[in-house]
Length: 168
Image (cartoon, rainbow, N blue to C red):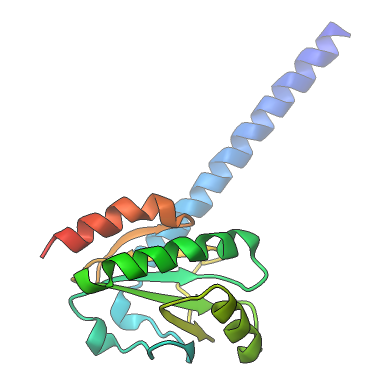
């Protein structure tokens, strides 16, 4: 019995390591792909609410692109924090664009955006960076249009956003 337990523990340990390494490889692939996807190549689709994103008008701003879905609970949970950040940092040069990636119905997207009191551009039909498989996903571009963050958490990205805003 003891030998069987050891074999099971070793097998489980190896499986956990393989899954962990695979997940890290996928994350690195996504992050690298987004880094190579500059702001100048992004398209945001149809504007549902807020200002229509204009690449020329975004020049010199710190841009947060928050890919999200109307049925994604982690996405919906982060939106109020983005509203607070946009209110606080817009005059410092922050621009938030939130492409909704799962719904086709613009009215449904608009209803969610209004219910969440979103104060930034909300779009649908955006062209996502290559290898972007999950939501929420946050991309932060500095004032020069370079990717300084690509990941899931706006809270994790916030220090990098503030740092990018402080640089001229």
